Image 1 (cartoon, rainbow, N blue to C red):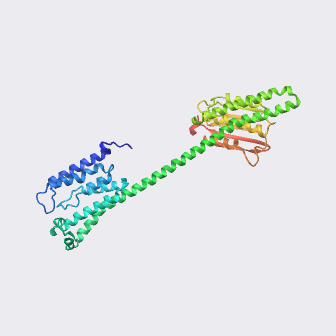
Image 2: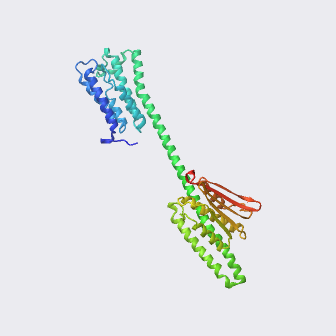
Image 3: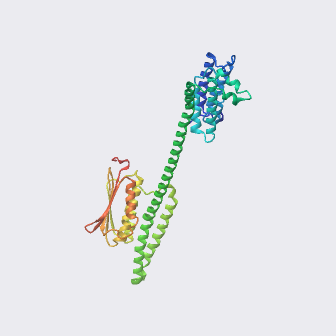
Length: 397
């Protein structure tokens, strides 16, 4: 919400409110003059009282304590009438003290309570000439001779105190709630930041595993082929060694691309079959036999889905090279209006051991991030992976 301010931080809405209340109060003291009790001919005091009591409203947000002290500075003077909107000014001023003031709250409330109480006692004891008494030397002796305030005066004083303390208490409650809400908001922002950091770290690990892990698997396969060639036919070891070198260079380039793009999201892929075909052909060249089938009409406007499909196919080839190097992995990508389904099957017991890798959890996380599903497991001697990614927005294309 935007607020317009004028000179010295006074909000325009407060200036307008102050102007309206001041005009009404000046009209009141003109129609029904307010005089100092027992002092005829002091109608001028009504105008002074109206200005001093109302004008501080304009600064109730910028200078709440100062505004409250100034606004209550003439309450100790007994008058024959009160300002009609004086109680409204009192409530607004001390509500602002409770809600906005950081220091001086007790002093402002104490001064207002004392000033108002003296004024009401002076009105109650007008026939005892309390105001001249305050100017005499022996004030304590004179006050000791005064009778206790009447019951009506005590009730009026209690109501007056409520006009100060209740708005002040409400303001304090609201200020405390705002502080608690601010702390909760800060804690929530910190939690979101930590979650975002954790998710980013997981994404980096997943990308490193998907990209580099695939290439390292190919390097391991070609290194084993080179080692066998060196033992049996050294002249044939050049081709697998060249393949290892090419794969290492490609892994280096892809790793560099990931590091360069960490601040801008994941690497983009071509929104067509070229990336999938290249993955299949490169895996076959490095000894991972596979059959890739792409059915349906691929989408061209869903880059996140294409990225996920490429990474899932890459991971399936990597897992097949690790766990079933002599088996053919059958890959199928089915595009439809409702979504895209990726399946991979091969003869293998599937990943095993006490410390599973990041491959299957990474594929599952990619599926969840696109509101899809992931299934993987062994059945009848074959290991199958199935991922379903619904169309963007959940609507059929």
